[in-house]
Length: 335
Image 1 (cartoon, helix red, strand yellow):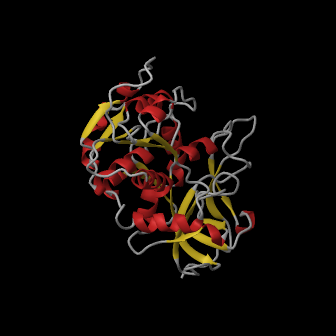
Image 2 (cartoon, helix red, strand yellow):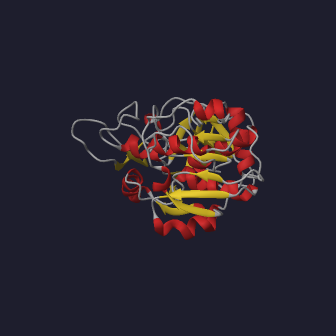
Image 3 (tube, one colour):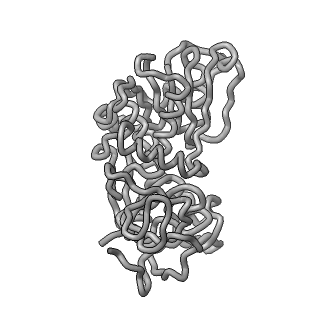
């Protein structure tokens, strides 16, 4: 069984100051970790867009400095207990303040409150859990929200915007696994074969949904949408949803502004569902992870785009911010 460390352990540390120093690999001890009930020996984390923002010297996401970023983590409990787990249990944790207002998953050890911990289902290893990570969890939340709103597999095409990113690619695979007809949008022409391998029935260029229009409504196309972009893209989707169709908004890489009218909502009865994965109550969080190990499990082998250690993490964070990643990037802390 893993034991508490008696000395320093490796972490990726980011500082936010006028010197603009990039994140660096250094060492910390248990005394440097925040208060909490559970110490986890972290084996894996993952790279999310928020991690890139938290790692920037001028980033406004992190609320403490210095900080160990990493909004998710998985590994083995070495100290503490909780509902369904104790020392030796394999668990994951993400959301809440992790990697934003307290040290996160880019470290060999992490300390978190017991009420934030999810016991890992037998169907997922720690590495597989972080292949999903926060992005996969967010995608699952979006798909569940669409289905709870009435979306069914026979209703027609479901469009996923920003489909090569972590949330988008996970959503494509989850929807396809459930039997939905999926249209993926991307600005990367070389990603079409990969998106089709994930399960997309059709792949279109992102420019098709980036055109501003003075028309409040256009031809009805989509039975539903998982939107990872926001901005003009989401506004276009809302104008082109079918009658009664839902859209789940998960991101804003295209900007936070949404220039639309009320007409799609009152003339076509469409719905816009906001997806937040940070403050989800723990019981709901555990339910969704159980489904990700079961009926919502995507094609993890195809989702995994890269795997890095701490030394390769700064470059991976830069690629993520620049939009150069495809699928999910796992961070390996063990070994």
